[in-house]
Amino acid sequence: DAGVIQSPRHEVTEMGQEVTLRCKPISGHNSLFWYRQTMMRGLELLIYFNNNVPIDDSGMPEDRFSAKMPNASFSTLKIQPSEPRDSAVYFCASSHPDRGADGYTFGSGTRLTVV
Amino acid sequence: GQQVMQIPQYQHVQEGEDFTTYCNSSTTLSNIQWYKQRPGGHPVFLIQLVKSGEVKKQKRLTFQFGEAKKNSSLHITATQTTDVGTYFCPSGNTGKLIFGQGTTLQVKP
Image 1 (cartoon, chains in turn blue, green):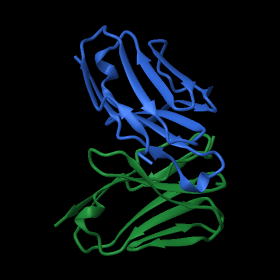
Image 2 (cartoon, chains in turn cyan, purple):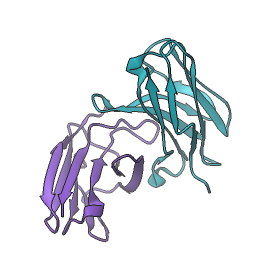
Image 3 (cartoon, rainbow over the protein chains, first blue to last red):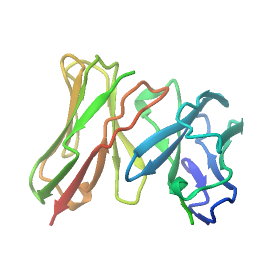
Image 4 (cartoon, chains in turn red, brown):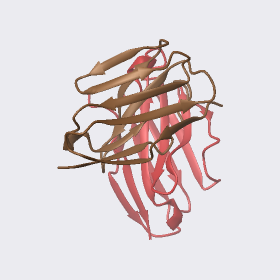
C-alpha cells in the first residue's frame, strides 16, 4: 500500500488566491482527518469524515476553509481566499474504524506558504 | 471531552541517557495511543494501550498504561540520535484524536 498520499508537497501562493489541497486515503480506511500544524498552535484537527460524510468540522477556522470528500478515495481541503496566517503544514490522515489498534496513518503533508 | 496533559514539553539528553515522557488525564481513558514525529516529518503511529496496567515494549521503548487508566508513560532506554523528534499521546477515541504539543526530544551526540 502506498499509504496516505497528499498533493502538492509544497505550495506557495499569494494572499487572496484559492488553494486546494488533496488527499488520497489508504484503501479500505473509512475515516479521514485533516490536521493543520504550526509552531504556535501545534497539531490541530480541522475536520473529519466517516464514510465520506463530514462528522465534525468544529476545528475549521472560518468560512474561508471548506473540505469535501466526494468518494472514498479522495478528499480536498480548500482555502478561499488564502491569507498569510494560513501558512502551515496541512496533514491528512486516515484510519479504519474497526481497527483502532492500528492508529492513524498520516500523509507526508502539504507545506503551505501564503505570501 | 478528555484532556490529556503531557510533560515535559522539551527534553535535552546526552546520547545514551534514558528519557521518559508522561501523559496524565483527569478522566479515565478507554485507550491511549502514542505517535512520533521526526523533525520535518509526519506523525507516525507507535502503539496503542488498552488494558489497565498494560506494559508493552518495542526495542528500547517501553510504554505503560496506569492502573487507573488515567496516565501513561513512554520510556526510552539509552537514547540514540535516531530518537530525536516529538512524541505525542493524543486524547479522544479513534473517532477523533486531539493532539497536544507533545514532548520534543533532543539528543546530543
